[in-house]
Amino acid sequence: MKFFNKKRLLVCLCLMGVHFSFAQFVVDGQFRPRTEYRNGFGSLMSDASDPGFATATRIRLNTDYQTEKYRFYLSLQDVFVWGENRQLQPEDENNSFAVFEAWAQLELGSGWSAKLGRQVLSYDDQRILGEVDWTQQARNHDAALIQYSKDSFVIDAAFAFNQDFDNPSGFQSIGNTYNTMGFFSYKTMQMLYLKQEWESFAASLLMLNNGFQNFDGNDTANGVSNLQTLGAHLAYKKGDFRLAANAFLQTGERQGELDVKGAYLLGFDASYKASNTIGLGAGFEIISGNDGQVEGETSAFFPLYGTNHKFNGFMDYFYVGNHANSIGLFDVHISTNIKLGEKSSLLAKVLNFRGEQDLPTGENSLGTEVDLVFTQKFNGYALKVGYSQLFPADGMYELKAVAETDAASTQNWAWAMLIIKPKLFSTNKEN
Image (cartoon, rainbow, N blue to C red; front, side, top):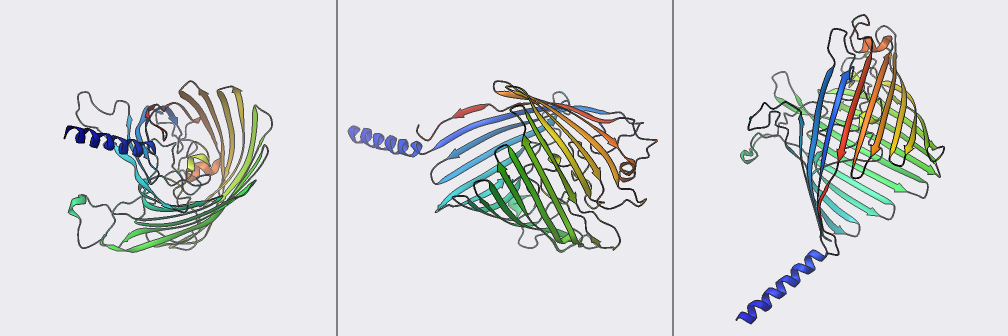
């Protein structure tokens, strides 16, 4: 009997060894504090107001387990501002601890897979769908994603039906009213993404439908408004030269049964590595605005779930929780990225803003922004320091409803961010 037990134990250990020989398990984290001085970030600062100064921190703990048949990923996150909890308080003041990602990816064979759960949807240059990683909380989606990949061709199809019951165990038999509002939070979502890559060229097509819950005058659920976003991203690279272009249209309805007609986004960027130390860039973006001539209709495009901070100035005056049904934007920009050393660089970018539509006074010049970002990498962590300044034109005062005589003479923003991503534990597929 003892021999049998030992033999059975040996067989079990061998089977476990076979299983783990095809598995990989990684535990890593992130610690990202960022200190900011805000004196005109997001909107014009009045002369009577004091600038804001604070430090916010994002911490993450990530686990990633992979086998030949499936992959499981879990990311826990907390975001907090230094000092917001009083001393000896047992709970989190802002209730910010959350599951940022929790998904399983099943390998279905022949290039097909299914990814189910809370996940990041990020594609191409993140113009329409992105992680929005600059924000400490970042963006995720609760969705089912079907994927196909073979050679240089990719198909992704995502589906979501969102609900917000206060108590998940109290799931009701009647009704599917969705009460989560704001920032284009959707009740339903269907997405199809196609991409083909060649040696020097890549093209992708995105088709996205978002359904938003509507309510009548009695605050009762009253149907869904569906907004369609369709477009393409093109990318070309040859040696040190890069080109990228975006073209998107929006139609259907925004939340509140607001008809969207003729809304569009066009963008073009070129970059060239002039030497081993200097990179140059230039581009433009046109985003349609609303002329306000027809009640119940808009021609304003909104880039929905993209990383807008990346495109229209780091000071976030446009499309970052704002500018949703306004005069649109015509953004022309130039940039340079200078390598200062083996582990350091400096990004400088200048952007000029105009409205795609005129303001009520006929003005459409909004101003110029200058963004600077210094990056220094060390062994195992990195430091980023940024400074931005806005030089507002007459139209910006009108757009933000701040009188020029009441605005602060300087509109600027400065920040410093430390990024540490420790790998806490790791196995590999061979061990």
